[in-house]
Image 1 (cartoon, helix red, strand yellow):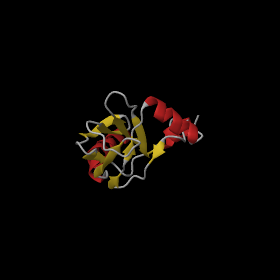
Image 2 (cartoon, one colour):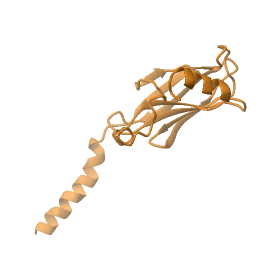
Image 3 (cartoon, helix red, strand yellow):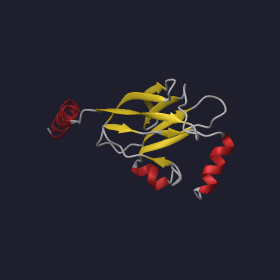
Image 4 (cartoon, rainbow, N blue to C red):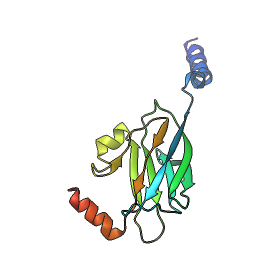
Length: 144
């Protein structure tokens, strides 16, 4: 009898559990990618990753602007990052929108990594650097 009750409880949890789970939120991210002189950078790939899985991507237009959507669970303890991958001659840029508890405990992201607040709709303007320009920027901010 006990075995039958446990099996029934497990079955109900498997069936009803997803019914009570929070529905994913549709997030939007938009902004402009520029170089250090302030010129918009075309053809920069902008990718959003939720706990390592690609959830949205876009490519910047001629003026450096982009807009994309992605899904995430606001209640989940996951890391959400944005990866800006510019054309040759510039280094990629990483932005953390949310850092999971585990990533924080492991010290996964340097304090020097750019962070932006997570919200259903985020506007973030990014700057991409040449390799020497990035080195200079990190040196000036005390991150080297």
